[in-house]
Image 1 (cartoon, rainbow, N blue to C red):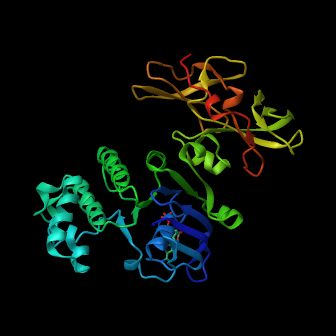
Image 2: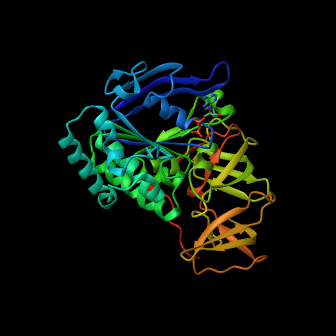
Image 3: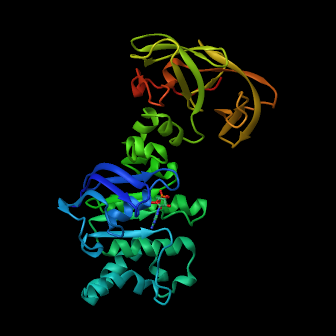
Length: 383
Ligand code: ADP
């Protein structure tokens, strides 16, 4: 049993503001949960509380059904992998891998067997007699992961393990971590990252943490759910803007009229838009923010469209991102177009905004309910 339960968990340092406020979370045995959020939101602090490296100011932590608030880290059945690898420089890879087991006075033959098995999984077999200084960053991180594996923990904790690796190695090691989690099916994994692509690709469930004033207002949890749930049904503006890259485009406007399942708005730039959302409780004139993801805005005029000037384009091969001019120079409107599309700066283009692709948020930033099935969400098409 290695499920993790957090109930009303809070963390403050001295008399300073609370870093973590009111986290309720149940991570099932075998689940891969990713903590994500902007720098300083408290992801590492929350992970370190689970690991037993930070005290819990208030609330309760259970692992495998047992209250762990005051249980020493070594007795929690968790293994942690850090960004900084934390290998012993004077020990070989073999000694680093087996160190935790030697400390626990495990039989030498068993240690050798487990070290060999972990080395095989992580393709470290040929490096067992090297010291860390003779390894690349990726190899060092694999040793750190191997050291966690040999302990056969009930819970794997990863704190930004890929941040020191270059882009190609990040992708490869991400794949290895997913594979390890799958192969150790009974272990729960908690993984901290600021990178929403890592969060989307690895997680069964994402916990997105609030930052700043929102923590005091709403607690630390901005939203918790499956990756695509956060993507398609963000609960508020913060979640909508954080999940997705390039990020969702936002435009401000006001409510003109509404009926169940549909709302008509007027943008500050003048155009009218219908959105498949429920605006119940809002009166005409209410301030709104409309959002649309870059891949949902389609080149060409549809039933409702905007005409905007191309400011810039990024041609990535399979995709071209067009940056359209808005009244706010720092926040262009980005659309994802096919890679063979070429537009020139200054060209004016029409962009269709399907009503069922729109996200709408009230003046407090809360999402209005979207009246679309996930399977109805539009598939981007070439013009
Ligand atoms: P994240 O991992 O999301 O980047 P952290 O969990 O490292 O954020 O830190 C959350 C906040 O707690 C930060 O504002 C940080 O400055 C503060 N913090 C972390 N450790 C301490 C400490 N020992 N004393 C006071 N504040 C701390």
